[in-house]
Image (cartoon, rainbow, N blue to C red; front, side):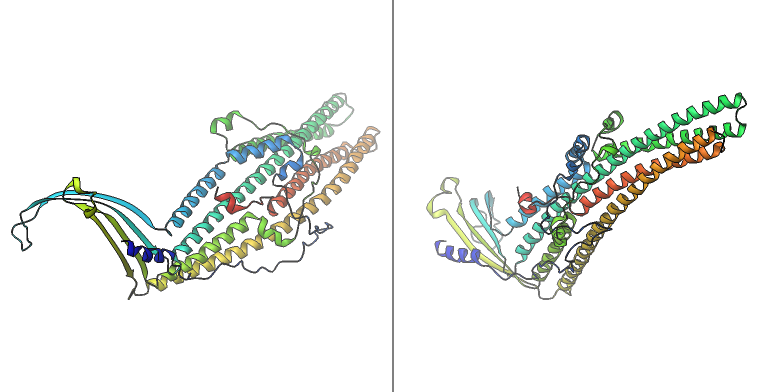
Length: 478
């Protein structure tokens, strides 16, 4: 056995060639800078970092608490964590397969051979005891095991990046839902205030109608506008309840908590920061920052490694086996020196005729790699489109909000003048109602624009990667 140890060590130290293409990040035709959207200045190349807790920029403790609750309890994130644990275990398995497997075995038997055979000693009853250690090792001549480990590592990285993408999406969805809820609160306040104002106007016109100061037409017009304002309240309240339910599910709350717990009030939508600063950075940084792009690249790397695994099947597999132990017909002599046994063997197995099996597997692996490449390229395209869309939405909603502020100021003055003209008998009441109706509509629309501007800002944070800049491999292997 001692003479065979150098051969065994030589076999263990063998490193064959690794088949299949090595992974190289595909070239992307990236712009040198972001296109300025509607007057927005291009970002400084130095401003490449996005705060990982970007939602804190809105300075709303309620929003921060809701996002952090969702990141702790969201069901999709729990599922992603379980997938990462599975991928980590698969990686450890693939790494372990590259090393020898040492196992032990012990056997004991008492038997009698047949006397009706030509084997000498037939009919004799004897014992057979043995204890041995068995070493099995596959020499990775063609890099099949190395490529399998590479593919498993890439799958783990893809899982970590997908988890980060889910975290980013959950945070963005919670923030968007929260802003929508605050907008509904504001619209409800406007609608209730309008109902109260029109209720007072209705009572006033009713009194004047009963005294013969105004016609029935004026009275009915006031009644109609009051009913129209009241009709807005049930729809807004329904939307608010639906939004609370949606947020509760995002937060990972139990059915009991969904029913019994609400969403706490936060800062009114008018008090939220108008436009927190968002660092942009160079477009090339998006490839490192966006978790969905990192996941797509990791999937491409895994598919690339699978080609090497498939090509290795063209070549023979070399396996080594070593057995060292003791064997005796008496249990008391099992560990004596003369009972020692050993065996060292090697086996080479390779394909001769497989009727195209290996070729088909290689072609399938190459096709899957092409699919992963197209998916990566499309993911990059979508990422840049989302950034540009969010920039444009951010700029357009800001401009629209300025115009609506001017419109509301003008309509309030119009409503005041219309009321004065009516009181002095220069116009009918329809002019007053038209001015009030227009003011009510624009006030509701302005709140929607505020919500859309905040949502555009959230989408911009999300499109830029949301700051999830972690060392994915180091994080995954902990």
